[in-house]
Image (tube, rainbow, N blue to C red; front, side, top):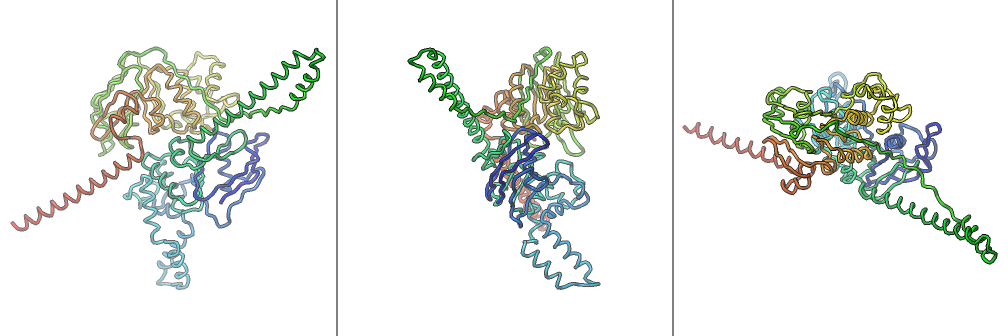
Length: 568
């Protein structure tokens, strides 16, 4: 459906990619991967028409409707949430609005011909079912029916972006081109999106840094690397294996040819002065000239070198939490939470969205005041906190990165600060970048750089994989594994939890479930996967059915009671 031929993109003397030719077909789902700054978003913008290529051709059918995620929700602030979603289908929405205007002015003037035309458009595009479809999509993305008729301005920023995603999906486009569509989604809505994409008939082209999402959704991986773009069949896990095998094969071929050259040179060196071997030596020299060794290009993927170490060990008991409770208005978020963490543990705090996991971390870090209970840090504990909102924690002052980091280590030399920044991929003049110019991933790397230079003996991490690319997530796992302090973290990333947790603490409406052991062991014991979206969906459906059944039973009971009272 969408094809590109000999596509290239240059910025000055820098080449993002060139000589790219491929076709994106209906019914397929393409996951675009690559290092930050390699050109993933640029490639997507070329496909959407937001940017032009430096060279090559892009072919898209003239009548094709492209679904592209907007970022500007301010233009819809006063519109009803469900209306914002329906606006995604622009021709149908315009027809519906114009029809309502004709009806509103019917007493003064009624244009019957135009009304009939609009009615045909609405019927042809199933316009009378549009609001219901919009509502289903909003529900799937975690926005309840009760708020669908409220203005968009009543939602928080993350939920506004969900509405804009719903707008794209409701448009029923021929192609979906989405940059990080799982940002701001929880497990349930991510799973719903996966199922939506699984049944989507058009072509889907997606940028994502989510291991599991790419494994569950992608039918092909489009790799932006080595200044080119290459498609690999299969999901992300298969792509990783294929790319490694390909690189290993090419390196082995180079080694083989280098060994041949070395053998030929050794022969020539040994027998060049011997007349009886002169012809053979000359033949070996010619053979050396014929051997071509293709140099392997350098990958654009860069792995930050996160490294955490504690200034000194804490006491054996790191923190004790007793009877912790917190409410916002009438909503109780945490009730009677008890927890004791020992030195050296890596504690994963899990549970459904809205249960209070982030609030719990904010309370123990003194960011939020509890309504009841106590928090007591142990002897010589020095916690380092990375909040979920990286930009808020890092600030947005017009300060340079090196100045900001130096504030935490006033005794450090300039070269030490530059080295710490270089380790997290801010090299050269990048160390003079302003804080306000940082992307989400760059802000996250800066916060981890702060933890590296301040040497806390307790790391407290709230959704630490947010905004990080795949390489940074893998580097973070390695650094936390090597860290000899204590770790308390919240994460919805099952892969991340799987790799790191030595203890699982699940916060539930009934209280805390505490398991000493790894995540796989916990699942074997618990018998259900609390981070598995399919399982979460099943339990949510069961809970909803139970609630409806309970409501119906209560209604029948009340009717019987009223009937009995009437008989008396």
